[in-house]
Length: 238
Image 1 (tube, rainbow, N blue to C red):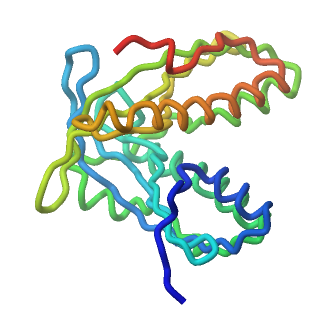
Image 2: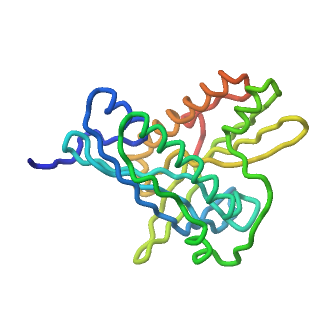
Image 3: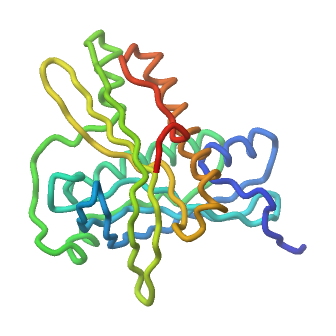
């Protein structure tokens, strides 16, 4: 049997789940990419590592491939420290593995390792600040404690460095600032990206992917009673 490429390739884990719900035969193989990236944030450049997982496989003998950003780590206060980023990435990755497993999609549940990052990350040192994620604040709100979430969206230009070439990407990032019981915690999520020099061809699709992920998060916020500002990427000016 000939294997062909899907004409409308999935872009999210949710797309794979929908294909499985419709009775599709879905295989899934994760491969990690930990890339050094030069970011430009409000005209200030900084270096970071991006934790990506490329999911590939077949849906009814048609191939697909997409990648998802799980975290980024850097040695300054513009994003989570590398030690936190590893744990944050694995928490979100394990959640996706659980979703795939519940849909009877078999996947090799490997995780990002801190050992890989110690080799790659100059100036690594252990940090002991708390590692929190959106789910923690959802649980806090579920327990009846007031949580306010300030949300800011941004298109962040960056350059990814591979072994033999570099690639300009624009990341669709979200800054979440959670306020609860007198404390504030700001953290970031990357919801999509597109190749910068293919903005006309890829930006609309990336907006759609990021906004679909935002809608899922907003549904969780609504269910738990979190107060937040609901915004989407089509409202952001580049």
